Image 1 (cartoon, one colour):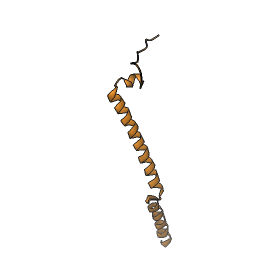
Image 2 (image 1 turned 90 degrees about the vertical axis):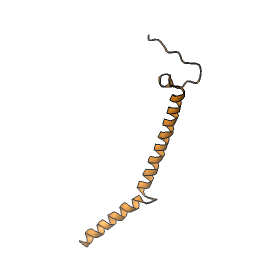
Image 3 (image 1 turned 90 degrees about the horizontal axis):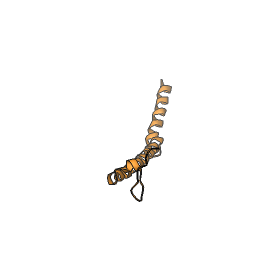
Image 4 (image 1 turned 60 degrees about the vertical axis):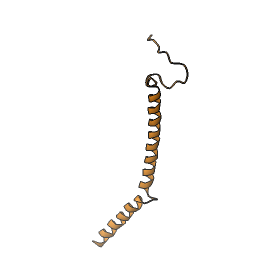
Length: 73
């Protein structure tokens, strides 16, 4: 039974270390948060563009004259 308790304690220590500042979970969480921030910035840019120019959803972000729709061929 002592061997099982020691093995369990070893696994528990390993799990707790992975949660610490130098652990794998901490690094994964930081990367996930960085990706979430980037996605939110991109969404903010998109929402600002659509708010300023709603037809950009159809015609894209052209910086020039108003786009003229093309007729079907």
